[in-house]
Amino acid sequence: MTAGSDQSTSRPPVSAITSGPGRTSGAAWAALGIVYVVWGSTYLAIRVVVETMPPFLSAAARFVTAGLLLAGLLAWRQGPGVLRVTRRELGSAALVGLMLLVGGNGLVVLAERSVPSGLAALLVAAVPLWVVVLRRLTGQRTPGATVAGVLVGLAGLAVLTVPGLSGETRLSGVLLVLGATVMWSGGSFSASKLPMPGNALVASAYEMLAGGLGCLALAALRGEPQTLDLADVSTRSWVALAYLVVFGSLIAFTAYAWLLQHAPLPLVSTYAYVNPVVAVFLGWLILAEPLTWPILVGGAIVVGGVCLVVRTEKSGS
Image (cartoon, rainbow, N blue to C red; front, side, top):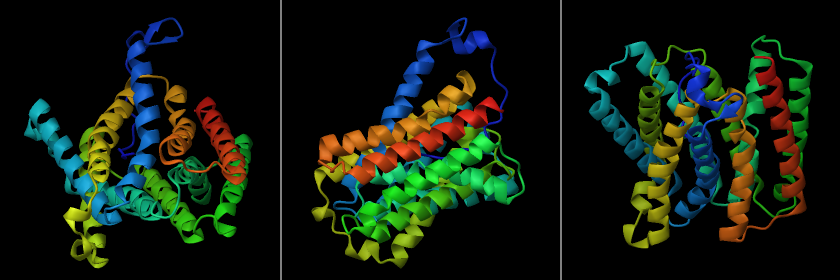
């Protein structure tokens, strides 16, 4: 997943987003399918990448490459002037990019050396819950049903930590993913408060570049460039990295940004609880990751809590 700025843009007429009264267009369903499958599959791809690549170095390569490609495409399609932003907007995008892609995604990449991709995805599904917590801490009122959804989701997270507590998965890896969800939530929350670039794709390009450079700095501090031997990197890790750049960071995000302006928000928000289901299934199917009872039960509770939060938030918006 790649972050964008606050998407509070005006919506096109209903006729532009539906194929008839009360019906969502085929293009919207196609874009939603891309977000469902591609973003759900990125956890599997990350797991394959870190099999033979250093975590932060691979994340740096992914986001710097994707950021440059996106910036280049925008300049080519709309002219170089589209990338012009104020210093405050650039600083805000850089800060959000560091929080989302270094603290959020970077910690997930690091954790997936020891945490199954499906479990990581289920833990990350709690991001909407932490966003609600941050809103409450800053004095914003939330409906009682939303609070109930958060409590249900947190109970699910407690169940999901059982594999780490029982020794089936490293507890340190589980805690890294939980830390990543808090950082991602903080970045998402900050993006709605800071003076971000008006164009969501431009904001995303700068966020990816800042996040990639941040991951590169951490990789250098960890000594990853010195330990990297390109001869030891497997073909499937290279393929997975290319998949993350092209599909995870470019195609899926573009589809998501388009959906925000061409489909009902309650429908778009369903990615939050479909992605982890896709990730768990792919991890089981391709990497033979075990489906233990804590993962199945805890995952179902978390997804249910997130579903309740999303439905309540959107119905009250």
